[in-house]
Image 1 (spheres, rainbow, N blue to C red):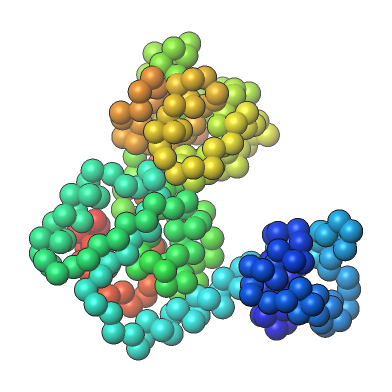
Image 2 (image 1 turned 90 degrees about the vertical axis):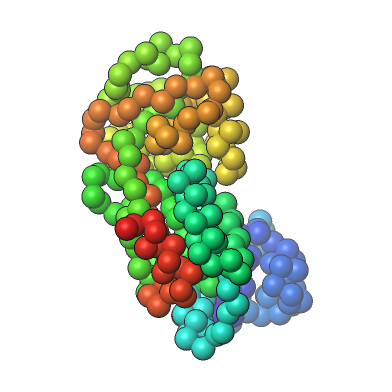
Length: 293
């Protein structure tokens, strides 16, 4: 499959419009239509319904492959570019909100003291977006978080030729309003909260899909979806009673009107991992050594 055709197909599906896809890709609408027709001819099946625009069953199946395929192509280009590029003293860190801790800030300060000319850029992104930033060369390394069994890796998107390292593990906790009847408990079982109101904040807290998998439950339904990366925003929603969220106790400190109660069962941790290329630049090596040493 021609990646140009595949990229046009993904753009049409994501935007629900041939004209919007053409504008985003810098093509004419006619060119996008020709790309879709060529892809359908290549695969021998219709991929899009035209009115309204949307994927057919075959198109839905292709979308499951298309995004990972295009991401790996971008990753391959970025990986080869790293072999020949000469970069100034610069470090770009893609960081999940819960990974941007005082300890990380202090470590970055120490790194800059050791290398006074080093320019540092920190981008706060959701977990999957942070990994993609490293894969595509938009960031030098990522720090991401999530829930896992002790010592188990996080369920990250296919990272290709990347190195993943554990940076920290803390007990997993549930964030409740301070007035919640269970706020005074020393610990809670996750299964006891399956029918509670939850906030789905996949870029800020543990995604509810991961809680369902860990608890082996069909519960944990979202009453509110929060698409931001601001932990204070999530804390305000929890404090106002919109729902619960799962994260690390240390992350919850300073979120007014909330209480973090440890999860006693199943045995889970809030894990922080570092993702970086196989052959990182010196600033990346120095930061990884400082965080994992």
